[in-house]
Image 1 (tube, one colour):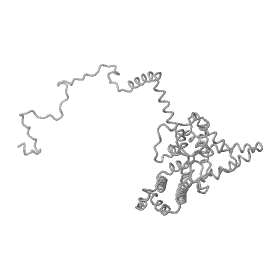
Image 2: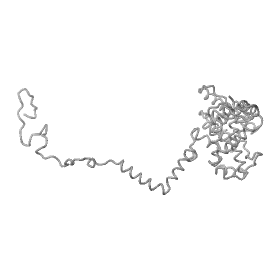
Image 3: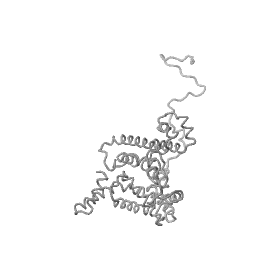
Image 4: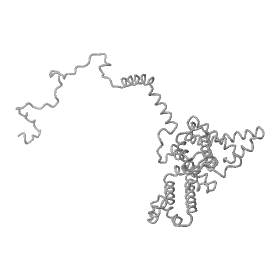
Length: 359
């Protein structure tokens, strides 16, 4: 069932009979099951680990209480993650900076100093990638988000893929191609009439990664045009690392880190950023305390002693066998002795061929 239908059921049934309220609770639980894990993952980037779940829950509650149908901003999961970021910014503006991560605080300090802040308290974010995403139809936006950025068990705004997993790559490739064309349209509209607009087809060909030779005219123009240089950089990144590029362009902050542990499309995961790495780091710090080091060191020594190979004589109950070589009296005879020096070779028996050297 699509997210829009679940939201409609929840809002229509919230103030009805007990049965209708049960439907509302079921719809809320399903929405939470679909989207809260992604919200929590993003909240762990924005907030201190102690407050990450509180941040995600507060953002989800705000989304559920929003009036109207929010699918002008579809997909809803993308809207939910922007609400997580917006709620974190509101915490910072309210003085709760102790709840937020150092990375987000550094980003907020830089962007508040460099640019204006919108009415919701979030630094303005209108890059070409986000502008192209907003211009796409609702279903294409949902396909881009749910098949490229954060693929999961929901595709196209909560509608399942019909059980045909083979159709997902086709949907993904088609969505990426639609996004690329829309990005070029947005770029052409922004640069207006002029040499940059005439070079849009060359930028498209030069960034598809199919070995098309670069145009000398394009290279000469890009050398002194920051707009065309940025467009070529965006499209090349979209071709090589679509998940990271779109996450970074569609979210206000932290998009690359959000998708790197999940997607692993070439990006190294920063050390210590995943929950498992943080748990291991905490456990390692505990092991370095003096109360733990002494018993642990003794245990390691005991285990090493047990693991070392021991001589066989330590385990034998009889006297060890002599190690000196046996005497000549008891030595076994040589099965093929050589004749002593100075002796002649015995004559061959009749019928036995004699080697010429023996004659």
